[in-house]
Length: 123
Image (cartoon, rainbow, N blue to C red):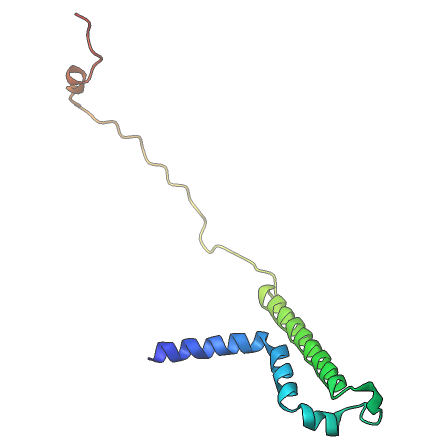
């Protein structure tokens, strides 16, 4: 149950971040009469039939600029996380040795495999 809840919350946040324009449109459609009556820049010019669309365009521009600023900030933070602040110095406390083992030759090996494994003979 907890895993489902966490998955739903993550999905909603991911989708919500990508659908900010949709949220602005939905808010405009829900409050279009109030926006046209009180917040419209062209309410003094009724022949333009703006009905609050100027307010909608301004809000869309603001959300787009906000998304661009957030994206730039994320890129800057990623850039700072990747690059180290100081140069990396590696020093070994002990000298590195190459170990050389003497060659070990087996003594008294039995060579029975020659009698078993051989090419077929033509008789």
